[in-house]
Length: 293
Image (cartoon, rainbow, N blue to C red; front, side, top):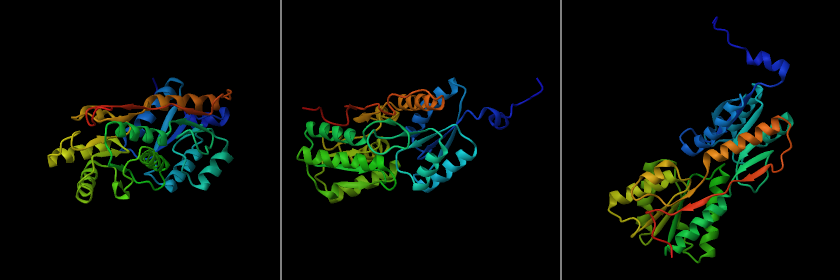
């Protein structure tokens, strides 16, 4: 009635808890990253915690600055995307004793807790699917790989599939593309100029796959007969375009929710049987690729 708002910082001096969780995602432009964060925020809200959100813009230096900022605000836990961090970020987090959860592949070295899926295995399985669809000259578009081990792992999984299934290993079929629809279309046009025989394109992001699909429609190239297109993530646009995109489906919100539960258990001092959790993935075949044999 009098408009009183409790001072949580003052309260934290006696309780030693602020009930704040700091989360760092690569970019606010990615619906995938925000879906992870939304799944986490739902669980935290039910338990009386609030989520502080920051974007690293794919920079480990910016991530380090955000981590220091969250720790200065006495965050009870930290959520990070991926496992690529500066040495100082790793050292500060380990010295602080604050629980940390990373959204990352199960393999690798983790700071504390991790929830995710194998990017490499997912890319390998999509390459398997495209090979089963009869495609042999498959191109691959990744997002920029600098300071982004998720994209590096997807590229590695694709290359492993190319060798395993005897596909065309031409290095000119691989390209890095900025994360926007226009760039995907421009890079596809250049790919078709230098390698007109390409019969499929696997994109490490549904956004890139959609941009490539729109460019094919602009050029009058039939999808999936002249060229098949596959994406990664299964964001909403993947099922809304025509033809709908074949893609790698990920349980985004469930991953975020599981990360929140792990973090809260760590904060509460509860025993954790599996500090690294693999949530898996699945290949979703839609109209942008031929039927698999």
